[in-house]
Length: 183
Image (tube, rainbow, N blue to C red; front, top):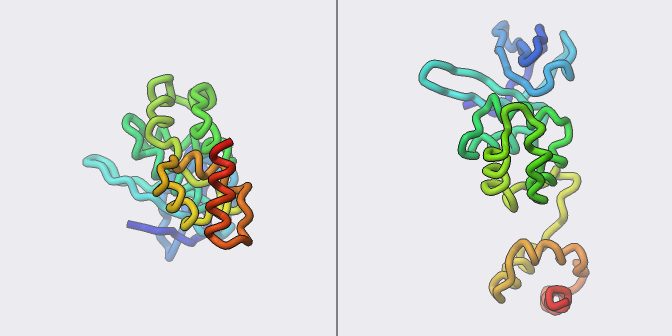
């Protein structure tokens, strides 16, 4: 299994690049091959797909893209070739938002994604995706666990967490969170 390959792009085609590393050219399927430049060096995060009749590499410019791709291919009925165009949006936060909002129409705009597969993506991934690290809310895990122990759902808790003062002691955070949850 590969984590990433660092090398120079020597060829660009419509759905893949050739990434040269130590005089070996790796054919790497990519969502946006034309976002690369020939003879430039890149660090490509790799997923290796192994099937009976095929061994293929899929590459991503960021760990977040790769992580979303891995979650997408775990969805029943969605393979790597169907998941790749979803990553091609260049803004994975939009994809995550569509899944979280159950936006079937947004997901159906991708090739080979019909109503059934779009609903399966939402069913399997809603509530399980993390937005880009820069946009991630700093959740206080201790506070979340305390509120869940009191019987509140994690989704409801995460909605009110940004409104809780993080500078307060945990006891005061819990009181403040309870007030917000009871509104």
